[in-house]
Length: 381
Image 1 (cartoon, rainbow, N blue to C red):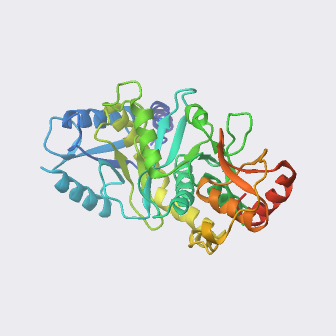
Image 2 (image 1 turned 120 degrees about the vertical axis):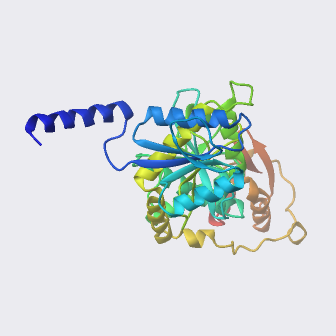
Image 3 (image 1 turned 180 degrees about the vertical axis):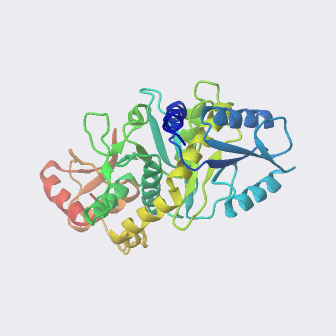
């Protein structure tokens, strides 16, 4: 090849990279199952074609009934047959990733979704949105955090910020994440837009996209995905975002991105691009690296069943009642009653309540410092 031809080739590749947003490299094949949508096969095909048009480095393969399309096709006549064929193509390496609906991941695998936040137009990862990372709430939230970090890194976010949605288990999770960080697992905590700051996030932060990753339980994440995707269409058509994301978890080797039966063509196109980016980066390998780093920092010990003995209300009677004018925050709602009983055991009268920022323990003003020390020692704050 002469110098003129070489220069022309370089400029052609650069122009293509600028147009598609992806530098030259191995092509990514993404399968899209087309059956099951509430909007029909045509809508799914439209989304797949839109993805292929926007990024010509992605080869999109339709998996479903025969349709009129320039895209490659794997013809299947049912959802079950399409899922089976999709899995065969993934396992055989003929697909780099897949986009599908209603897929049954094994326990331990959950999806990390991606939405566009309305206040600032900033993408936000929701960890997680479908699947079950663990049977118990707080262990699931802990795993969800690592899953979210892995997906963020696969999208090129080298130091993703983590926010914790203010839900049941949030305070326990915050303590455990700080313990992981102290033992060497690198976590960059986000900051709420509210004046009090900190990594515990509220609705304002969802709208603003304060962190790169918002950690929540799967049911909450699924609800948020639907709201963010369809809040301006009346709910029946999901028009914004990138779908419910790829399934991730220790040992899971495939990239299967989930969309809803209500997802419209723009979301389906976003899901294809999301899946392709994860495949190009090697998401399963990134997930394994993150999990091993978390293991070295002690995540498996934190995931083990708690050893703290729970005492019943009958076993511990409260001290004489006193006026409770002081609040102690930072106790998780799942532990609030146990925290109050621990103070009773130490001879400190306490009540429980709910402040505007979450649960609080109420004590007498003169007992506040002592009570806070007791709760800190007991691992409640």
